[in-house]
Length: 490
Image 1 (cartoon, one colour):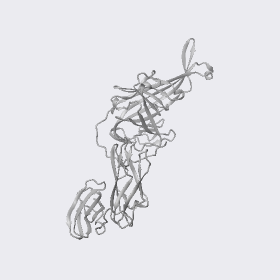
Image 2: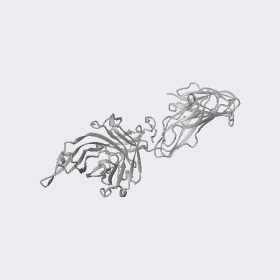
Image 3: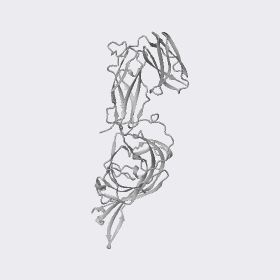
Image 4: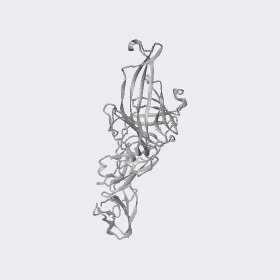
């Protein structure tokens, strides 16, 4: 099954990052529970490459990986070491992972990685491929250091290991004088923890370290034969060099490997912009929409009504509302006050706010909104039913009192710089309460609360102490409630 592609620009949807302490990665920070399945968005293009921005090295960095969400998903499964195949060959392994990708300079395809998590470091003991000639245990002569422990910014080490695969020599090779052939794959290079900071991905924002690995190597074909009672090796003219490549890997406590981005073969520039392979942890939200309705109630033509749409995110990944569309040409009358894209952190609630300003007598019956989100388990977009009508529209529900004799005029000026004038008419003496809040309903405050005589009333408002932006003025009298959006400029 293909999941929907979600690509989002991160600017403006997540809060700014403040300075933080340098993180470390310890053995307990790497997931090792048997039967745990780790999902990754994955993409590969070894011909044209995939455009990437690997970010900068150094301290207190921010690496934004939210854009790297693809159609394809790969899965890594943690295996109980006691039940893993070829257990005897890798008796010391205390972490075994079955991965769809095993890349140490060359792509071995899917298979098992046998690892050791120890106080001194995180090591790979060897691999076992799923098929082909690699479907045999390949124990490294020297364990490959994945990370020293604790892993922290500034650590650096050399990488060196080899695989050796042997099989009987075919009779057609060198006239049948060889009795066996070995494929030797030598990998060498260096690694370092070149940065620390915050990494943004579908699981939220986590403190992480970044590892840079530069690897290369050579594949050699070696034949063996017996000459004068001695076994000798002959290097065959079929070997070739493995071109250098650069890989960046991000690690976070509790998450383990957050992501990896591998350059095209032959790449020398650490700031490469084309990758042949990308994997980013896929931690998805669980969006809960208790009521699939948005209700404005009764709103007079020329005035505005507010409505909220509440939902929850019970998943482990961040929930994102990307956009909202309206049917029936309502996009010119209904404004989404909440800034989109709107991010809801795991295990938290969210709320969208809408402002409806009808231009003619109408009912919203039969109209709907399409809410686009990033939960792959739900229909996308989600269809939300709209409710609301003007008081003079025939056949509407009249549970709320009609506001026919209470008139609010447009404030002047609007937009305004600090001060504006609210003007309205009262059919009878009434208490007038004017309150103000931002468009998300926060920082609600009462600006005016007095009795006024019938007739035309003007109330000056001084908002010069507030930050520039959009606000909602709520005017309440005995005749009803009217809401007006005002724009404060500075």
